[in-house]
Image 1: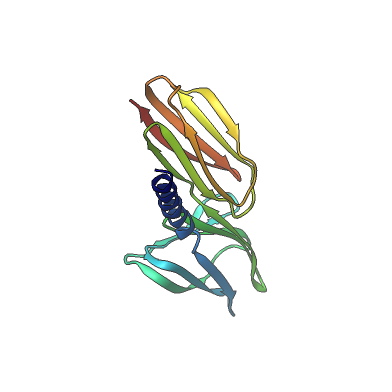
Image 2 (image 1 turned 90 degrees about the horizontal axis):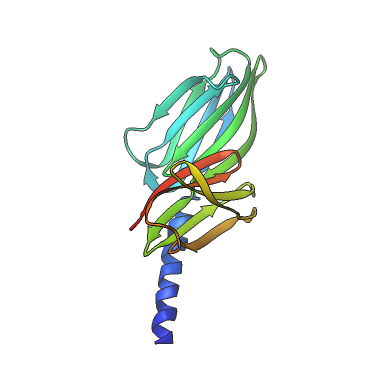
Length: 196
């Protein structure tokens, strides 16, 4: 019996690890070129659609492109010469992972800042067990909140480790609808669950 439980646990842990780490494969490289242009190189281990957004310092969208087909590699030359000089944020997203990078567009071309990697957490709820997995690339503090009817009923700080996989037994909660909010690095992610 112990062997069956151990094998079951190993299989579940392996599957959960595969799901968590699969979304951490997005790589983005921006290479400044002459005349206000830059080569954007995107690669991923799995074929996926890619979204590219560029926002100005006020948060206004100045460029958006979503690929029509799925790619493991995608290259595109971006022309910044028509933009006003200033700071811009480029966000590249693919399947729950995103890379953010600051760009400084000036009269001498484009300066590229450090990449900030982000991955959406993975939630699951089965047999009254809430599971949360997250790759915390920037080692931000993480907090989990549980609400019922917009009222906070529980919160849990989860530290700032790189890889998080946790489970919580929710059998003591009353039956009904709940909203789980995961916060990390200035981002919040929501998950609705129903306890029967």
